[in-house]
Image (cartoon, rainbow, N blue to C red; front, side, top):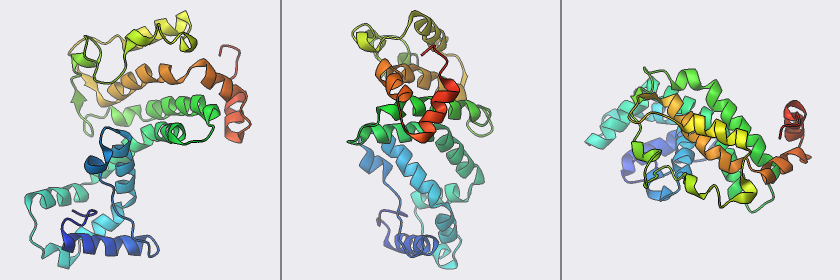
Length: 240
């Protein structure tokens, strides 16, 4: 309603504030539900855009002419979120922890050579999640989660990580030690209470072994990109 034009008066007031905050350029919100389809990344792109437009949104709902508008239940709930400081803090913490992964996905989607950046950004994602773990594990912000057993066991695997295909991808297999490490990371009791941070790290550790394959490591080691070369000098110890 703030960014799609579904409610013309709300949309017009918001876009006026957006223009003032972006040097005359009208920057709108992205539609996560309508434009994402099955692409989960679109939800994160929409959240990044939402975070950028925090101040225009707050300015909009605090205008007297906005307060005089008749609002339906959906609009009133949106206003409550905009005025809630915890909402913006949670949004920032979540996006900060996964931002390197979104950059990685952007490179994967681009029609340009980028194999040298994959292993680098995968490591940065792990670092970002671990550095944000205290905030992600804050129950005052994110609460606690009871994971669905179907995410890790059984024939139905809702997070898309099909462990049965590891043996088919011979070129991408990890070493035995890595496999043991991964199995320890994945092993989580059914129906146990997991904090949000542990849940994020748990699923990232399952997925990153699909990304950190030999080709990605070779591209990383041979990269000529400045920040990647610095990372290679710091982390290249012969075990890769």
